Amino acid sequence: MKSETMHSQDPVDEKFGLGKMSILGFQHVMVMYAGAITIPLIVGGALGLSREDMALLINADLLCCGIVSIIQCLGIGNFIGIKLPIMMGVAFAGVAPMIAIGHDYGLQGLYGAVIGGGLICFIAMPWIVKLLVLFPPIVTGTTLLSLGAGLLGIPTIWMGGGFGAQEFGSLTYLGISAAVILSIIIFMRYGRGFFSHISVLLGLIVGYAIAFGLGLVDFSGVAEAPYFGVVKPFHFGAPTFQLVPVLTMTMIVIVTLTESIGLFFSMAEILNRNLTRDEFLRGLRADAAGAVIGGVFNTFAYTSFAQNIGLVGLTGVRSRFVTAIAGVILIVLAFIPKIAAVVATIPQFVLGGATLVMFGLIALSGVSILSRVPWLEKPHNAFIAAVALGVGMMPAMSDKIWSHMPPAIGPILNSGVLLSATVAIVLNLIFNGLEVKDWRAAAVKGD
Image (tube, rainbow, N blue to C red; front, side):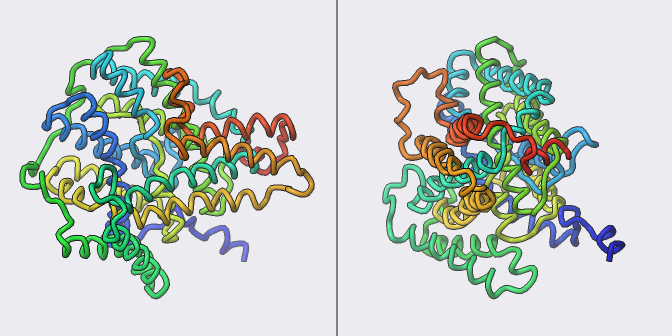
């Protein structure tokens, strides 16, 4: 029995046939694609970029999503990459600051700030990772619950038709989203083997087919998209490094690292394993390196994508080689804009049904961790969780709640996960102190 256990393969290292892994990888691409291209569209539009430059931003983003995802999944030696099935995408936290930097300092200043922020955090990572001891279950569980619940606002808007939809909340949009959810349930419940694993992809196909049949798929821009494209480093010129923009983006990268810490814990919960401090260190290094790579290739900072972690939990496919294949697919899409444009025709109300389930799983991973908290022995834990969760949900409940605060601290106040984590850490130290023997603290110390 001991010999079998020693030689049993870790699920994250499992490999299937190339065809099967490609389909499973494409499923990851489908659920993250809209989120991956949203930030380039928002930032590029706000900065008044031309149609050609906007297309370049999207292609560069897909390329970097693929590169950083592969680094995170497969690793570079034992130095960078957590080597778990995690996909990387552009961080939403830095949208407003990046637009402001772009307006005031130009694209060269923006990309210099992204590179500078990534480099500073990469160098400081050995000190940053030591803060993991501040994340016992009461902090981790509350942070994940806040993160998952806060994210549910995105699929809710998508299910209603998407941002700016003229008939937002129409029964047609909601009905198609419901059809996607129902299809996923049916394929998961009655599908066998491989078909159960690709239940989300099949659900998206059903939703897309219905939308296409009703004439709700917009193919504008597909004909104009070129078949081949090239992404060049420093397309907009050599980056410039100025103190204020670099410090601002350093803060943004720290925010994304906080989000990644929570999502790493969520992945560990899904995989039923404790992560060592070295694994956290390698994973966070990949995040910081992603900002540097993004700045070089004319895009932005990167972080772990929650919907893909939720997909791992939903389908049970834990292989990091599947997400690495997904990274390869993203790179291919970056060089074939025609295909990328076709994938982009998936309506948001189709994606909404699938992401609703996956973001919900992130919240439930927090609930799972909180179930291990000693509530009766330490009644103050209920107060800690309640206050931290409430404060963390404030930006999700109202995007104007901090409108009278200084713009410089906007990225911090508008990050629900950072607020929740900060409040939980402070209150936990006040009421419980630093418990180094806690199971999570012991895990991150490598004990």
